[in-house]
Image (tube, rainbow, N blue to C red; front, top):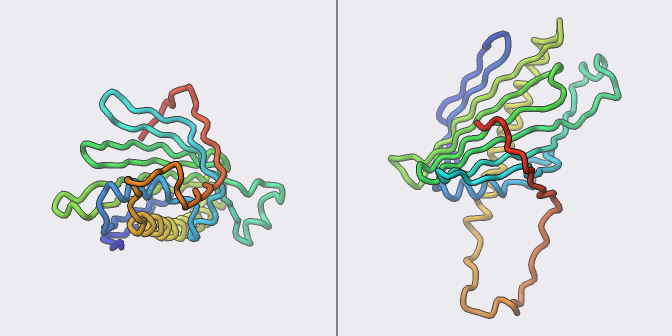
Length: 220
């Protein structure tokens, strides 16, 4: 369903930089729907919760969203011997996104809120309709990984890069999983009496949907 085009990793400002480009064999509107429905999925069990903090449609018809994700943070064996055992294993990640329905683009930026001294990971993704092939979507992913731990920054960054590459591969599988569900769903019955449908509604996973009244200061 997706085909990698480029992959590169190198040092930037004493940190690590990751870049990849992937062609997704699905139209942009389906990829957009799958993006919002990708959790939970069997490939991203490290993602524990997702909560919408803010959502707004701007006068220019752009959809701005901010979500809070909670993910597990298992340390490697050598790090568990170095860092305190009481260190929280959960990572809180903010995700800002902008949807432009006119240009058919979705741009996201995510970054971790805690464990910043240990490691900071900033990721930027761009989903854009392929103009030459409207049934395909281009995904460009970038990530910047850094650590402020004196004497251990290099191995921590290497670990962070390895973990990020593993997680982004799982993220692609999770997105493809959501896409396959969307593409195989039967169209809704628009002619019968919807009030007496013989099929019961499937309960959604519990998740908070609280919306903040304060506009976020930063969007991608």
